[in-house]
Image (cartoon, rainbow, N blue to C red; front, side, top):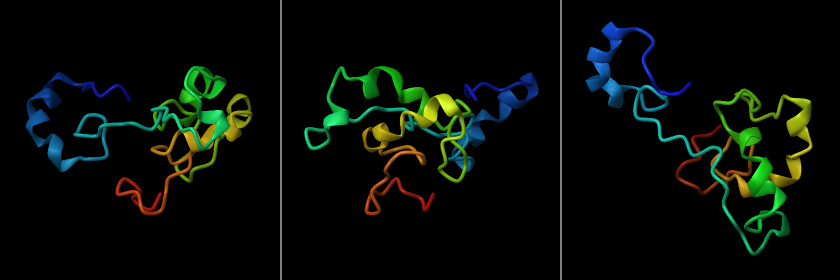
Length: 104
């Protein structure tokens, strides 16, 4: 999940990265745990609890956010109020008109 190849012989195929846009070993630029501050949502203020602690819960590679958008670990279910602060995560609030929303 860190974007590194496990097998050295696969490293030669890294030129094929564009063929795998949703893979960390391809061209995926994972922003799912990226906090987005907002003056419209009190939970999303800079330096707040949602920014400091909740990012890992919305990461699509950390094991807390399921493929269907459900937060699956108990410790992260408490971070549900932070979902608006993580609009790039399938477990966050992805605006329908956002071009990064691939129907997840």
